[in-house]
Image 1 (spheres, rainbow, N blue to C red):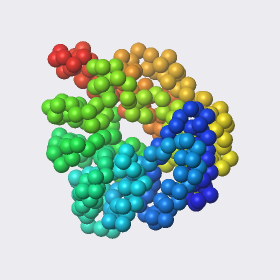
Image 2: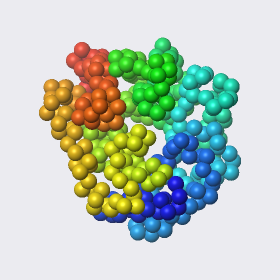
Image 3: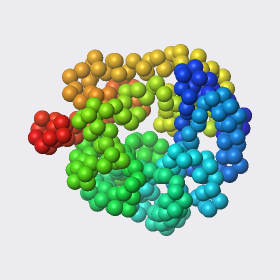
Length: 343
């Protein structure tokens, strides 16, 4: 992203925040691998944010999603400045050799470098969170994976996601080896949920913490793909300044609103695509999801997944059947838990 594009993005979302009465913006930097950028780029980012946003009364929180294999002591100091006291470094990990590796390197090197980098973050007092992508080869070992992550990172936020058919996962060989079905995702959630329950239901394990809070307390803090509100406050931006519905949309080049250099806060707010997508939850509630007891838990799921697998955003997520089976297991009349009490 060039300095000119960076500034056009910051001006657009600064105007957006002020127009909507929001005094804070959160930027999540990802790629590719964002730590491939020289430190001068991040100095440019912080300087432009201070000039264009902070000076106008809009506070900034930066987060970053990285595989951590490029982390160095020099980068560590810059990272602390970038994310500040409240920011979080997000990272993906997999204990299985050969699944998440460095190109051309021997199996296991990624995990070795990742572990060293995580230890450096912890020693520096920098918060981090872990994303684990559930794939076919991990299905027989999920309970072990859960216990291992929790034992090694007990105070760290951990999130379990299914493998989506996007990016490299679209390749026929990759998907045939690693892709999972809706039913397999539902079964994975059941196993992980049972381990989470034995673990005392820690709030920092997702997606279970927010679902449990909704079920028992009515507390509303669902993640973007389940909230039904992703259109309201999420945007994705590519390196050329293209503005999309979210980061996954930017990766797949879908749901594009236009260029940051051409859009205004008003044109973005009134964009026909944004209005159309805002009606998705209304449509689903009146059609496909009309009789679903678990509507509040998922709101039809991720819009991008619906587009990828169903060919339209106006359909439930392709993981719908698995999610329903899990919700019934965890929260339904025949499940093990009901309003916090044993059934």
